[in-house]
Image 1 (cartoon, one colour):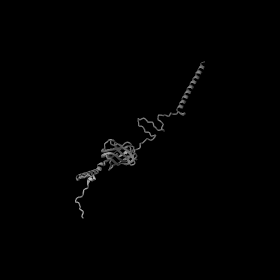
Image 2 (tube, one colour; image 1 turned 180 degrees about the vertical axis):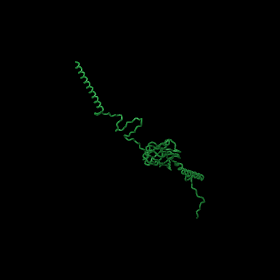
Image 3 (cartoon, helix red, strand yellow; image 1 turned 120 degrees about the vertical axis):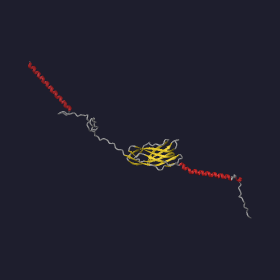
Image 4 (cartoon, rainbow, N blue to C red; image 1 turned 90 degrees about the vertical axis):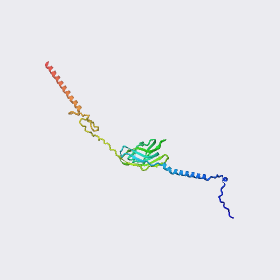
Length: 265
């Protein structure tokens, strides 16, 4: 006996299972909302990285072409095209035997903290915004001072640059600049040789020589008298001879006086 096949599929008893019946219209509305939500989420996911990562800025480096050993040189980093930057780090490579970082000489934008630390690869420069300071946009200028030592030529090169925006995304700098600088040795200072004197011109007063072996011109050696060891002994002998002559003349006068008295008697 053939089994009869129903023309319609039997429907489950929803009341017995506790499931409420959902009309096709409601199902279509739910499906449309789900598709819209997924589409919107996908659009945000694709657009998010492009908004968070700012474009790499243009960087220039300025420094003198030459500097004399012992003097200082100011180096400036200028960034343009900066957007939404809250922190940055840069590394400036320099030969430490020719150029040495001058402590506490770095400066940066106002409203932030800027520091520089020498390292094996160069000088690490860091700038961060403080408190409620706004993000940096447009241009950033960083400068520091280097002290020249030794002599020779070297290259100042910006070897690394990283900028961090408000969302924490970092951007590495590209097309980093460099410039050449020459350190000139300092000329030695000429000092006069000991005992060297300059012949004074007419009308000028002579300058006493500072040499220890030269006798000062103000000291005059006395002239020794004939037959004496020096001027003072010679003078004493002369006075003694004069005194003896005077005594002899006085004695002769007394003798003559006594003779005359005797003749008169």
